[in-house]
Length: 446
Image 1 (cartoon, helix red, strand yellow):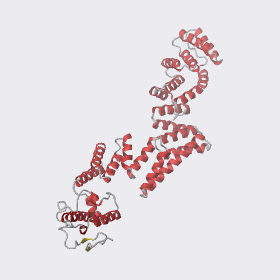
Image 2 (image 1 turned 90 degrees about the horizontal axis):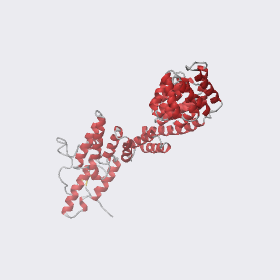
Image 3 (image 1 turned 45 degrees about the vertical axis):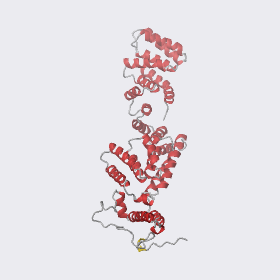
Image 4 (image 1 turned 90 degrees about the vertical axis):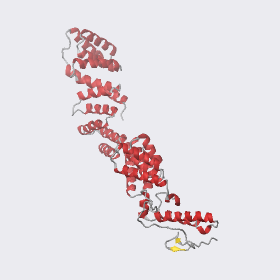
């Protein structure tokens, strides 16, 4: 973004040209009712051209005193004030000029620039709107700077696009467009605009430096999205972490990366929480964190996130289904949880479930216990372990359980066949923890 001081410097470079235009436009105009006023103005002009600013100012003071309604006297005095670096003194004179002659374009343009320098952006915009011609490159560039200062990037883009067409070699317009798009988080448009700059001037230092940065960032983001499409989520997370390192200052890119990490990564909860600190009403991130809470079996926290998301997106079906799921799982967690029985996470793969089952089946096999009470406790534990394996390795039953329904619960499975009815019989014939089919539990431990 171009600073106000830079804009002010540019303004001062335009002043001599403006003065020449004024001299050409108003040469020979009778401004006052007294010839002495004209004499003071003419003498002031000569002294100004000679660089004798203090003497020129004295004559313009006299011209203003001699004819308070002579707009040229005020304009000339404002010109001297600007040449002396006294912009605050010049501003009232320029305003008086515009009051006396509202169509005095040069005075309004200069006042707009002074207002811009002082940070009075709304007033500056008003002046620029009144003097800007659709075909005038300089005035549209100045108005674009004003829009940038005001944060109205859409209007700035519109003016800069126009200037890039009105001026055939306007590399600076393409550079500014690229930086605006970049700061808005649109890396693809930023890349397009900076390439246009380099087409005009391949050695343009600002554009080439910016091009390398945008190209690197664009490649990282595209690679990360391709990895997500391939379901290589952890690799995608690594790419998005690289995005944050490449551009840590532009909020849009860091939020984009963190949102994607939140949606896909194993560190979803802390990353989602970080995003929500900056954007508390981000519905997608709230849903992602809620789902991550479910995976971590923090159902009450998941319910809170879904309820918050619902306040900002009342008709979101995904929120409603997620909330229902979290509420069912909370209720279920207060009863029997097959994942907890086997000590696996809710997203565990089948091989992880079978491995955990085999280990626990060996540990809690009733033949390992001699005391009647311990054996009875082991029998119950063993049944729970076997039922957990049965449910979690059967896709249909696992889906039911994940939606809050217990396939082994007679109350929720009335009319359905139930497994594991009754206790163990002699030899503890039951399910093989390492395969399928009935067998006798006979373990020999060396």
